Image (spheres, rainbow, N blue to C red):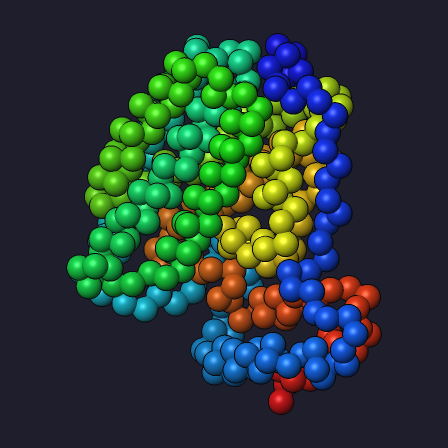
Length: 341
């Protein structure tokens, strides 16, 4: 099916705004010391707190390494003996059983989607994105309930899952703008599946978080392969179509803090999307799904998930993120000197 016939975007593409070089643009007419002001103060306080913990974390693998490798990371605070996320000592057959069930469920959904949606790409993507954001909300719901009961607090998990949910929500907005929800039966099917998927994920997460994370990994892996195949089949046509407004508002926004947050194998600010056409939009959605897949795989190893912004090595990258380029030659040096005092 030709992509242009299903896309509601027949008008000329709005010219995308130029990528922003940093989050917080500092005043251009002040001296270096004045510009830093309170920013240097809070950075100094923050780095002092981080460096106090750094000696205990020398053996921890950098955030640049693949998340599954970080098995030596210390468990998060508040994990006790009654923590349901702590796996048993002998679990090999349990893991195989969980993964077999997940693969069966995923393949069943794939067969259904292939049968119903065949060449209706945008409608298929709308259903996928409606379903894809459900597990992260389910994870947050259970974690909030556990926190309310006083069992433990998992700030990093809550923050990362919220960022994942927000990312999938913007994927959904993009598919709606492309007309994926134009037919009511597609909306009904997507929301009907999402309703039961939510309660299934809640039950699965309470029974075995590892199983729930693996199931989400399977879903994200399928989403990645779906978008990748779509890009290869329609590359030339997609490059002639404009980017949806929802994609421009999300990927080119000045505040991309939560965009970095769900990419737990990357240093913050190391990935900044470019959006020139609809092809770029789908490339970024595909790459987002790859990052979700990596994060879900990392979550299956208990206690290893860390928010990218909580890692000691991310501070310098975050500092460079908020300082615009070519603004004042001495700003970066001033910040670095303030952090070493």
